[in-house]
Amino acid sequence: MNTVDKFHNWRRKQRWNKQYKKGRWENLKGEKERARYEKIVEFTENHSNKNPDILDLGSGEGVLFDYFNPDNINAFLGMDFSSVSIKKANAVIREKATFICADLHSFKPVRNYDVIVLNEAFYYIHETKKSEVIDLIVNHLKPDGIIIVSIYREGLGCWEYFKTERFKELEFTTVKTEEEKTYWKIGVYKMA
Ligand SMILES: C[S@@+](CC[C@H](N)C(=O)[O-])C[C@H]1O[C@@H](n2cnc3c(N)ncnc32)[C@H](O)[C@@H]1O
Image (cartoon, rainbow, N blue to C red; front, side, top):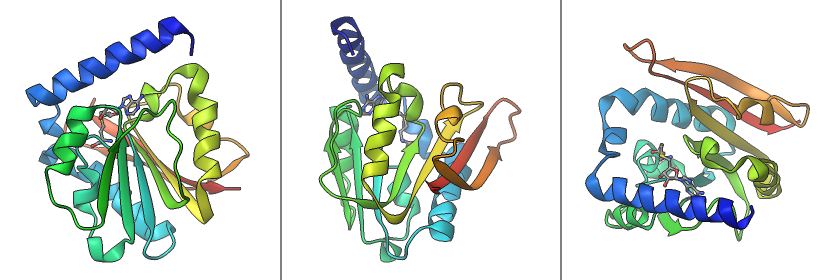
């Protein structure tokens, strides 16, 4: 990213922090979003190695973790560039979970994972960095590891990165709600 892009990224981070401070994202904990998180857990159970190590990129306050049964996972790392969301995540005692503040554009995992999740996060990656982030994910997957991607509505600038020969699509679904325009597409992938 050039200097201007980095500045905009910094501005976005301030915006997210402000929104998390104001409680703007409390709705993620609500019933309307439940089916999306449950689908990610279901995909994990159906397709990942047993007792997985999970990395949640752009985890926010860690809502996804709360849908897992901690007995069924080995460890969960959530990361987000919003220090406010990470502070909120760390304010809750969650067995097996760790939350750290980091930017998706520069984050380097220190270990490999069975499951790497991009839950409503891929569209925040700068266009020039998307391929790099995908390479990083691929390089930090354990053998038979899976990638789970969830995107609101159609996910422009997302699926073309996963629906390629590089990946095998294990499942793909649309999670609908009572509101016609509120839906998510969720895919689960492994290396082809
Ligand atoms: C719509 S929220 C989703 C949060 C969480 N994945 C969930 O579904 O509960 C998007 C999250 O992406 C984070 N995010 C946006 N750009 C990011 C970046 N460059 N690096 C890390 N996190 C980022 C935001 O701070 C926010 O927490």
